[in-house]
Image 1 (cartoon, rainbow, N blue to C red):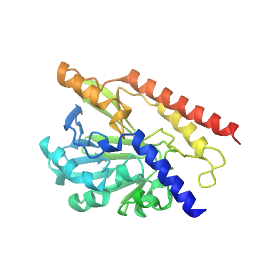
Image 2 (cartoon, helix red, strand yellow):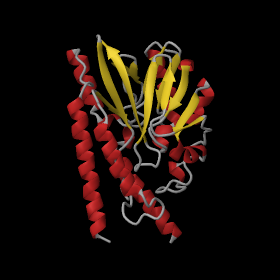
Image 3 (cartoon, one colour):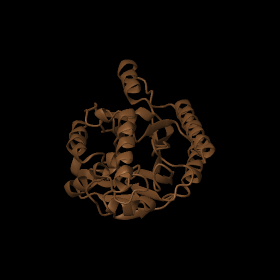
Length: 285
């Protein structure tokens, strides 16, 4: 039974990775300014954001362990010092968003801040995940957490002020980050979505390992719908159409990352997808 369960997790994970374009995880993408002091320094498939300040910088998502040199290269191509990253944040405790945290923390000395509900898993290197368990290829190097965050906590450095919103379901401590920036004399509300996605194989009904998962997803959609958003970003560039928007920015010189309608449409589509899966699973029990 155990072997069958492990095989099932492996197969479902393989389907997930195929769907979200894992082949793009290590493909370089041009580092670029999103807006004001927010820069994209991730790969084609995995988003990572540098928020620059006069007192050092904040990085959201270390991605894979193998991503760290690419992130460093992107930061330096933009004219910033990798060693000036003072705070490391993540969207959630999955290997593709925090697998490089231990390596990046060693190289920069950055303090690592993680939502409390994900912190134990992060410090265990992914072990104990409610869905993937101790599946080998989902594990990563354990990393100490310097500050355990709670819903609504504020992270400040220099001129930057980020708010951590716990948006659970995808993981128990999945975090959506918000901040306000100014460009051209105007203020913009920025939202970096953690993840509203129901991964293949997630049990939304009678989940003994995570009994409140459906309720947590419902809470997440309420939170996401309540957030003011001008600039829509996310843990994967595919959430907000990174490639197409970047191409439009290069061509037109405008800023397509300012997309409040796209944010609303994305959240409503993801909520509908969640509800359809919940209804399907509910009927099967």
